[in-house]
Image 1: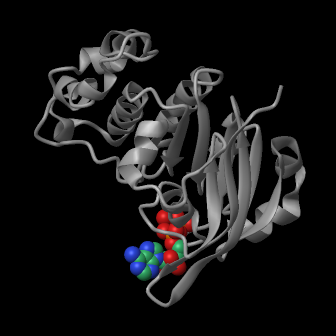
Image 2: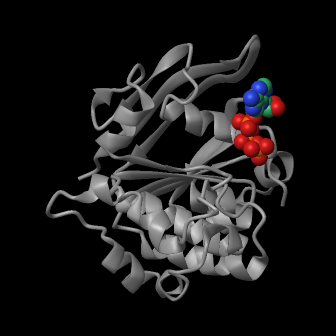
Length: 236
Ligand code: ATP
């Protein structure tokens, strides 16, 4: 059965008078990996931030698991089960990898949670080997893996990844591809990307954003084969 986990209905978001998101609608179903593609400045980050009310949409609705969360504060939305990994990752540079993970533990005390630090270390052994290294001494790729792991410790039902490939070397992007694919079925993912090759290789469906509007949406196969869309709206 197909279950809707997130529904974004015709949202409009602004920075001051600047009308940046001009009526975006999208839907994510349980278990899917969905990408939001678009060039620099298209409105991907603003859409992500609008979903968790870091930027309040002036019009439209956000529905999460059937509940209208449009006016809920961000902390409550996160507690309801949406994890957010921002573009700049927000790793604490003076804390070790283990300490960066332990910070989330208090939220994670309840029994029956899927993700624990033990499981993170088992599934992402690189983090175990780096557990005593300070966050500020990690490479960009290591920081991205740590940021995703930290978000998983909140045991989210939906994970929002904002431009996870930003600034990463191609070889690291390949590792990230494997990591994201390993999460399929574990957690539903909505990711934003400029790197169309990466996004297409991990996603089930995609939305292309251009100037704050959806320019295209469809199955990943359709997107992959649509050269016009790729040339017009994506940097490929
Ligand atoms: P990027 O790859 O640059 O993150 P993006 O698709 O995520 O691109 P957004 O960051 O959502 O795009 O930006 C959408 C538009 O909003 C751009 O025109 C950008 O200049 C503008 N914008 C973003 N942040 C702000 C801000 N804090 N104040 C004013 N305008 C902003």
